[in-house]
Length: 50
Image (cartoon, rainbow, N blue to C red; front, side, top):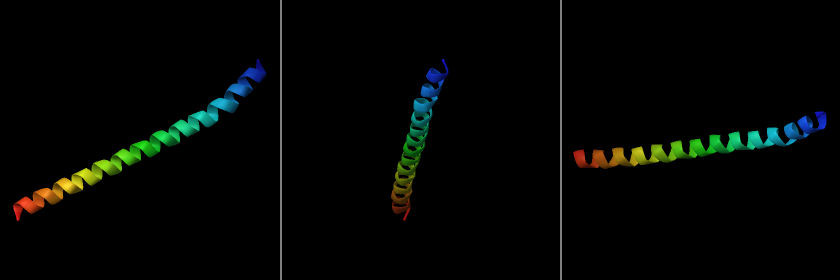
């Protein structure tokens, strides 16, 4: 029983860390893309206005 629990922790903890890092980086990448799109839109609107 203890060996099962230890092996579960041995594999589960690194997998959870990898998933958390991947989700964080993926969310950050999507955030950066959104900012870039908004900056382009602002530039277009400023060009139209002038």
